[in-house]
Length: 612
Image 1 (cartoon, one colour):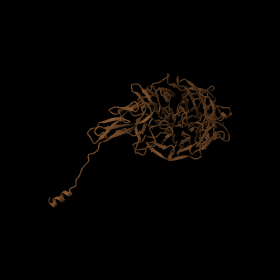
Image 2: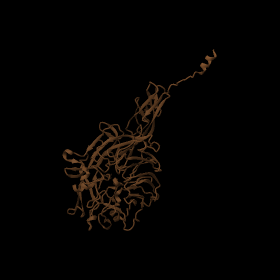
Image 3: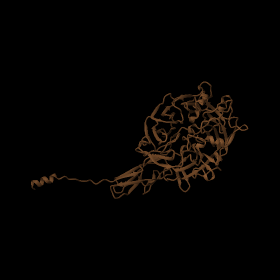
Image 4: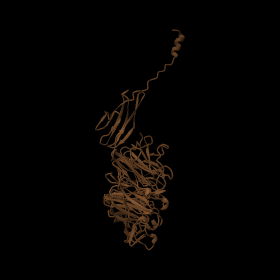
């Protein structure tokens, strides 16, 4: 061979392009399912013309009744047991290549009442899908949103595995609006339209929402309809809700009992909320103080509803902090809607008529707490004379029988100063805490006020009233600015966001809260702070969820590590505009259930979860 040709061949560059390997991706990557759900998985097969896969569950082709079954098209039907399973799509073009997804079985029955339970501790201890490692912006975010017809001041409620006529079992989230509507949405986004919607207005017959300008009301505008969070019975079958309407010039509150599956009225309802109590205070007529259309005009049903021992508790405050009106607590039979009792917090007359009345029960949107025997409510600014044999309980924590009788109470020693300076106790609701020692076998009750204090009370002996100190109670503690939010409590640790303050954790020891927080976060929340809720799987993967209100702008959903709230796991601003929930609402509380987080804003419900 010529030398020049040999050199030419040697200099040639040989380029070999390897064939791209087959790859398989399965979506969604993670699915949290209740027992009655199914999940459609899809497989994307790349670098081959053969896009078919063979499906398996935990290594079993097609699965079985123990691990769940999966069809040839990827439809997974879960087993009726908790656990985690691996779904695999195996390429038929190259069986050595596959993609996987995780199925997490969960069966939390639902969030039926404000702040999770009648203790009002804000804890869901059966959250197995959302973990401290999965709640981050690369894996977790906004899944979908649903537009509604009014502002959502009430906390969304959730019922799992609810049988819907002609649709079968569904996980359902319930939303109430200031436009006097209740919506039932598929909580997993399987349909965009509501499962049902119930409206309590009828403009053709003169029934509308109340207009804020006519009351007047400057906090909730422009209309007032449903403000307090509804409650659902323990079977998940009946939703109780109070709607305020303007009916041909008369202001009316009605208690509705709705079938959760259909939205239909139950028990012959609704019933109009009326009644009267003996009293000589403002508005007394022949020795009786009525809750009538005039009282209903200025009354706001801000506190959440409570259901305990067959009684639905409904509490009222005032739209604006004015003289001459009253706080009310009423009880209705859950099975018949018959009124069990009506109680006015301030029925007595005083020599100084400027002291008459008030004592509204609004509690920063909290609901009455209940232990199965008694209900606990907290009143705001108002007249007080219970320590001298009277019946006025302004600025008081009250322990009520199922007949509405005050069994015990606590009123701070400086109640008069609190009232004069608008630093009332009733700016937040009570939380029932299990007793830590034999010193308080019935447990503790914790509540707070606008003065920035938390009050720790003995469940069996609230302490009543002293004139110079509060030394008779377990503890009073200044924790910062005004407290307008209810703490969440997990394993003796209290999570709280006061007004214009940061998220703080206080770990209770020997029935006492520390004078300084155990841990705190960095983000400052404007007025009114935030009411935290906590998700956990037993004692693991505890996450503190809060909604940061930014006036006129998008709310911010935050998730912080419960063991050290200084560590933020996620917030809804991290992914730019992807996860924004909508314009924020005061006193909003997120709902966490079966792998999803539900957030109400001014015009929509936004649902978060693990990204597909």
